[in-house]
Amino acid sequence: MVGSGVEVQSTMSINGSLSNGKSAEQLTVSGVESFDPATVVPEPLPPVVDSNGEEVVKPREIVLGKNVHTTCLEVTEPDADDESTGDKDAYMASVLARYRKTLLERTKHHLGYPYNLDFDYGALGQLQHFSINNLGDPFIESNYGVHSRQFEVGVLDWFARLWEIEKDDYWGYITNCGTEGNLHGILVGREVFPDGVLYASKESHYSVFKAARMYRMDCEKVGTLVTGEIDCTDFKTKLLLHKDKPAIINVNIGTTVKGAVDDLDLVIQTLIENGFSHDRFYIHCDGALFGLMMPFVKKAPKVSFKKPIGSVSVSGHKFVGCPMPCGIQITRLRHINALSRNVEYLASRDATIMGSRNGHAPIFLWYTLNRKGYKGFQKEVQKCLRNAHYLKDRLREAGISAMLNELSSTVVFERPRDEEFVRMWQLACEGNMAHIVVMPNVTVEKLDYFLNELAKGRAIWYKDGIEQPPCLAVDVGNENCSCAVHK
Image (cartoon, rainbow, N blue to C red):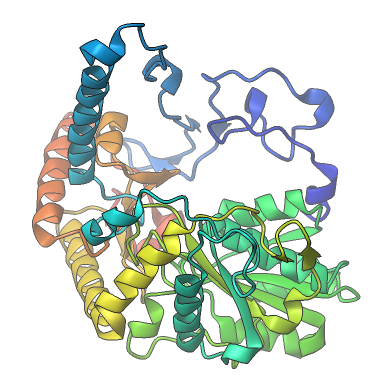
């Protein structure tokens, strides 16, 4: 809704939900209540199928994770004789050992989030004794000497070549996460066009709409096709509502839930055909996961600065595989002057979202880019796509609704009925859908293990015939739905 970024001021709870269970459109400053960690937000879901094969709407509450305050590890003061007894050190060692065991178990059952857990950075352990901070502009050294800018700029140059922009024409930096890349890209667009309207498909990452609220931008949510990609017919309709204002567009290179890739060329064509010349729009490409996979897929459309785009961002902890959240943001050098300021305290320039920046992340990225190279990434992409098709085919053979978009390794399927099963496999869910993101660490053996467990679960959940698997026709299309009505 246009103006939602200005008209709605909301309070976000520590677990990501809005306090008092209201949606962003409902909550105003006057309506804010104290935070309740047990709050759940009821939302209507797409139709489901009852035992008679008829579609009915059943409300479902968003199931939030456990309140961590019930399981947190207390920080205690050391006893006076701890130095001599070593009891505190022994206690902490045992806690860390148990935590490592938990991490191994949770990694074994991880399928729903786009993180590549297949990496080995043992060679970089020698650098963990240093506080490496890349505060300020990556291209201008600050007075703080313990930095890794030489690694950071090397990584940025690699991505600049990937996205076809010359060294002298780009500016970028290593962000702390994918969200920061979106916040920066949209901020650059807003600074270039202060009165611009932000357009993003309704299936864009939540950080895009967070940016609209933070920057008090007018924002239009654009409809999507059943695949999840932006509907350019609706985009045209929304554009014409604000023809007198510049357009700032978020283009998804892989949506969060369905892994859909927006048609960048069609978005540009729609803009031009409706009177938006190149000097009246700014395009940010959110390529969190697939932004690094698509260049290695044959016949995939190109994300390139040879097209009239303003910025591209990807996550470093997703397909690349980095142990800490990070990302890469690239924009055109001429745009960055609109928001950069020189800072005497740093002896550098401020053009980033954050001040202090993790100086270890660029080294980890540099290390894995050098080890894998273009050929290594291409091999991993092919493996992911092959295994994703295997998973989709196995699900459909078992009579389970499933969809896999072209160019994607995200397999969407029916949401398991048991929330404990969902938590065990760390599945990302939305409405009646769940998904698995097939990453380089996801093997066929792991998928077979999951499929066998899912089959056992469904035999229990639907054994009496009273309950039926949900209908996903609205979400994935009739041809991909295996419910009682559409199979």
